[in-house]
Amino acid sequence: MSTPKKLKLGLIGGGPGSFIGAIHLNGALMDGMFELAAGAFSSNPEKSKLRGEELMLDPSRVYGSYDELFEKELLLPKSERIDVVVIVTPNNVHYDPTVKALQKGFHVVLDKPLTLNYEEAKSLYAIVKASNQRFLLTHTYSGYPMIKQAKQMIAEGKIGKVRKVYVEYPQGWLYKLLETEDNKQAQWRTDPKRNGLAGCMGDIGTHAFHMAEYVTGEKVSQICADLYIKIPGRPIDDDGVVLMRFENGASGVLMASQTDTGAENNLKVRIYGEKGGLEWQQEDNNTLLVRWPDGPDQVYRAGTGYLGSLAQENTRTPAGHPEGYVEAFANLYRNFARCIYADQAGQKPKEEWEDYPGVEDGIRGMAFIEHVLKSTVSELKWTPFTVEK
Image (cartoon, rainbow, N blue to C red; front, side, top):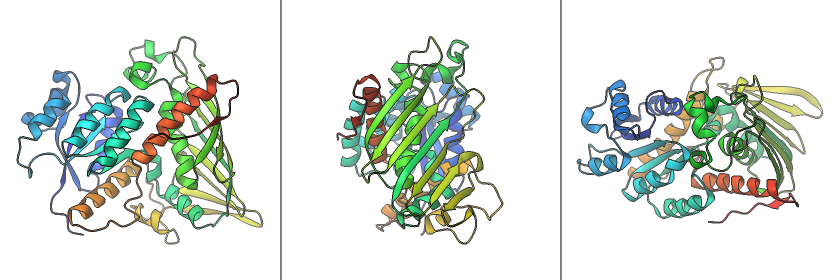
């Protein structure tokens, strides 16, 4: 497909020292489909200016606020202004810039979760659905090739009807009160006003929840949750466990913690069906383990010719050449760009390109947070999982 021009990005957030902002840029720019053209990198205009200098941007395209970015970009000829807004701010600054960007005609890439709370999520869901713009929510781990392979194998019935799902996300970086040590990441992620009322479960538990539904293709129908504050003095959860029941009758266990001392970031999923099982973990992300009851385990590897179309579409290098976290981001961005190009050409995108997380995933993630919080304080514990839109 011909690409008439690179898609111009406007970045909101991602100021000096930002982790996730840099990761987004690395992923977005990897395939040459995007270029960074403008940004409002911080609510502090001086910090925004500094980040613009670091990125060698035209100073006239570096703004002191996202409102200024929208106002001044729209004054530019359409061929020069940004096409896509990327939002990598704390959760309390997700809703407003996303709404304004969509209403002003920009496509949007938003770091998860969708919003600060469920009420905002329902409102944003309606706005995205009413919009003609593309919307990407970066549940990064769905971009890994071997996660795509697992999803396709399950969809094709290779392991039979799903019976059991285990998904765990252990981190250890909040094993102590880092938020009292001038750690900005810890400060906003443990602040309910900026992060939301669920701490660990909102931050990484939503990734685990999305993984459980994405790979299996099954929807959760009930949950039973327990949230914990392991480190005294912290206002919101830093650890939790959720039991899940799926619409097809499968059961599941979700564990997420940011106080598992020494743990890094090894998201892991195990899925067992009537015929076999699948296992994947981020620390060995190029491998998918397939288990059978009447034969030896099989090791599927990224970059090999025997993988399905979803994995092939999202693999970049031959077997034995490691692909990782940034490439998973890049896969989401590349599929997103391909869909925009197809729209511009009046063509229907390939099915594999449209396999990126969007507002449906986002509102289910916010519903997950809402129901986890309710279940934790409920005497009955088991809570029906419903999604209001």
